[in-house]
Image 1 (tube, rainbow, N blue to C red):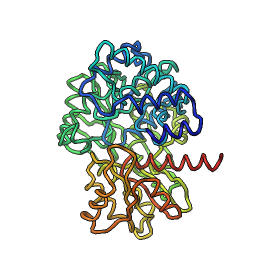
Image 2 (tube, one colour; image 1 turned 90 degrees about the vertical axis):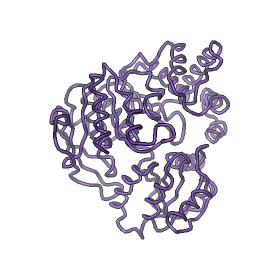
Image 3 (cartoon, rainbow, N blue to C red; image 1 turned 120 degrees about the horizontal axis):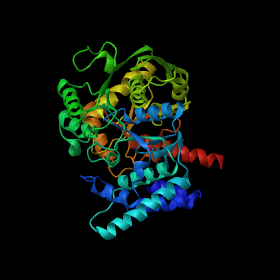
Image 4 (cartoon, one colour; image 1 turned 60 degrees about the vertical axis):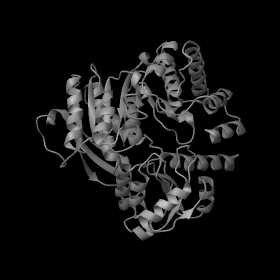
Amino acid sequence: MEHELFYAKAHGLSQDYIEALEIMHSYVKPGMHIGLENIQSLTEVMGNPQDAFEGIQIAGTNGKSSTSRFCAAILQGLGKKTGLYTSPELVEMRERAEVETKVSSYEDFGNAIKKAYQADLSVREQYPERWSSMFELITAAVFELFKEKKLDVSVLEVGLGGRWDATSIKKPEVACISGIGLDHTGILGDTLEEIAQEKAAIIKAGEKGVVFGTGTAVSPSVQNLLIDKAKAEKVPFYFVREKGSFVYGDDIRKDNTVSFEIVKKADGVSQELHLEVDGLFASYTVRKIAPRYQAQNLACAIAICEVYLASALDQAKLQEALENAPTPGRFQVLQKSPFQMIDACHNPQSVHNFLQSLEELFPDKQSRPELLLGILADKDSRGIIRQLCAEFPQVSVTQTSSYRSLSYEEIAKQVEDECNLTPTIYKDVAEALVGLKDKPFIACGSITLSGDVARLYHESLVQSQA
């Protein structure tokens, strides 16, 4: 936040946007409330802007961000005026809100934040003990922005969990749980079942349906828990599964399952991934320049859109929409010579998916770029380190700008403990990029690290063009 505020002032960005960043930097507290009373009070003062459009809510440990992006792109391509709310941003906070596949303007986002802030001051006059978290204030602001833009539908990525996430004050037409994994255990629970229970709270009576992504098949107990919740709420449920990985039964049937098959894997960063998807209403052939792990997210987005529209999708419009859908921070190549890339894998499950695609790109471990590693303190850092460090010939560690970042000293210690190697140490990301300037590297381990690297690349690009 401090970096973005400094950059905005230095480059004379919109005054509305600067004022919004100042509000965030000096007033709004980070954290999460247990309960929805605060965000409900805030949006009530604002006239409940979330009721002005239909919604699709997407939760999950992994894959929810990419699935959300693909879903929004498809709906926009099919003629729906669509908004997208994701978090966190990579470079600028306004990236969290997109309208018709374009990042919101500085003025629009800044004005929306200021309106939400004024509403929050009104709430605190009546309820002095109530303060908005940063995520609650941004969520209310984005709802206001989407209302002003007269959207048909918004795709809302859940920030954390589901039950108490600020996006959950919006009752969606379609819900999706992309997957269940051990993440944020201090908040969501220590077992897969406890975490699934929190995410399953987005399944609510009256929804058109809920889509369960491939990552929900982690165990029979998790899958059954989600199915039972959907049945209790009388919500139709649908599955996304890779062909050959499941069998039909009483609950997983041909009429409620979208299956997909990878018919051609991308064998380079500019090569296409080819999928065949058997949807609920039609079959589709999809091509996308993307790593292998995006296959399940592409299929999941198709399933969500079919459930929402209750019809088949136009094949040509579907393909065009997906071709133009960006996935910032996901296997994103910053430059090809020397090869430098970021990926937002941030827990053992997403690291596993990332490494599958990395192996296809660089089958020889010894020829792989150097790993630049940064991890947040509330993650399974040792689980991340054990997987990543074994797959790279050289490892560097750094500390991200997040207040949740694990220190570079601790990351280095854990790398030595888990992998018996001594990494190169950089005290922050800026120092790391100077040290690795002329070397090939891949930065991953947290969303924040991807964001920090992308931001510094963006700033250096702007400065070079000035």
